Image (cartoon, rainbow, N blue to C red; front, side, top):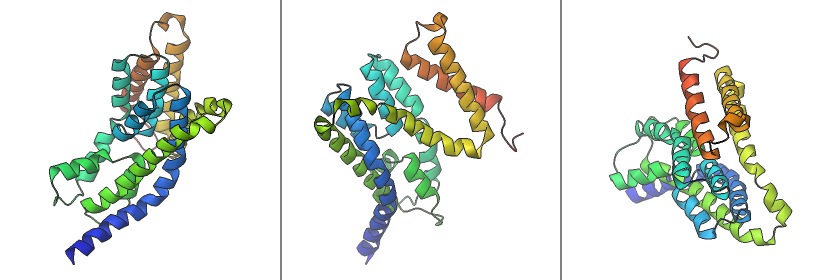
Amino acid sequence: MKQLSVNKLYFEGIKDAIPISIGYLPIGIAFGVLAKSMGIPYEISILMSLIIFAGASQFVGVNLIAIGTSSFEIVLTTFILNLRHFLMSSSLSQRIDYTKSKKFLSLISFGVTDETFAVASLKEEPKLSPEFLFGLNFTAFFAWNFGTFLGIFLAESIPKEIQSSMGISLYVMFIGLLIPAVRRSTKVLKIVIVAIFISSVLTWIPLFKFISTGWIIIITTIVASFIGAKFIHGDGDE
């Protein structure tokens, strides 16, 4: 009886992850095609999806690899972009029923993304079962990796012009993440404008030409975040 209940929780997580998976699949394919078009070895692309499992960081990562950015800059950029995952995991940890081993809970934490966090956060139950979260996170994980695999191995049959155009998917992804947040908050809009200004200055002013692309991303992220936290207030903020 208990096993049936546990299985039901797994399947509930899988069911709730289906809409996420439908969205992840084409983006995963786009990532695979983009990585292939940039000459990234297929095993590296697959390992990125298996180990990093973060779309924005992976798109940024392959672009940095393609332009010859140092390993340190790539790792640091990825780390900064993924800092929000600590906050999401910490938030979910307050609602998890600690009946599983730390290894199992670590696996759940690894699978947390913006989308799975949103779905889990909207659940009305005060406590979230580890089985539900596992089913939710790793269905999305499978969809992302399957999409990457398809993109890499279908890339050969895709015209070079279309492969090259996949580079725009990075910007499409970030715009898709920004627009809902910007519409809800004037503070986010102001921070975005600050980030665009800082990035433009570091990119186009000759004085800063010695700064590599990786460091521009890192500096822009840190400085814009600090200014946003310290000096920028949105509607209703004090």
